[in-house]
Image (cartoon, rainbow over all chains, first blue to last red; front, side, top):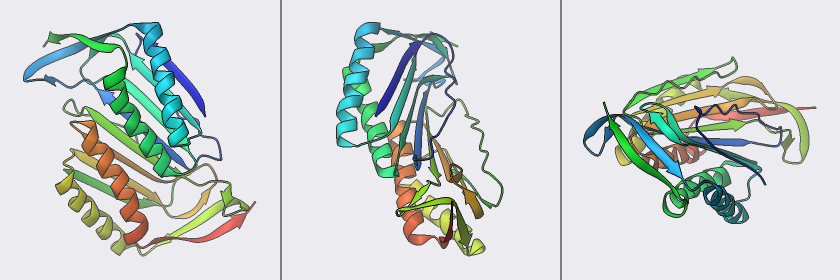
Length: 126
Length: 126
């Protein structure tokens, strides 16, 4: 399984390029919402302990890939100020069949929130 | 939950347009693979009993939406000859939070295969 991880300050652009052995593409985008725990915001600010975050994301993907074999996974996470409506994270998983791709992608998002040192540093009011 | 369904003979192009209340976008693409049960193929040919298929898709989405509340779901399914590498189906689900979007999308794909009169009529050899 190929793994491609990037933490970036620029807007996330992730073009799908699908090899002929991939029957399933699952893509998840987590976007910044205007409503943050009852406050109307214009942006969230994300920060990370970057080298550890990237290592941890790779470790989680390797673990999940052993359980749910997929062809490739790409993860992009944005850092710094992310305006409402923009994606803070995009993950795209390619697999021969859909069940593994759904399982890996959903499980990764749960693990990301628990185990990776990336955090919402603050919310900026609208 | 808004529902938008189209069975079409043209390649599927589904541009994401995300409202600010959507925190989660889950997109699944099911693509035609070169390997069809051990044969190398160049295309699959899909046919449908179209009016019933569209009604059935809507019914399934309404049922799943009651269980996993989402903001919107769009489904595109291709009919006729679909070359290897092209998407036969695309579903894109928008929700406030990711768990409902993952659950609805994955469950829909299981139900589609079981309960909707769309079938692979034949495979064309490479």
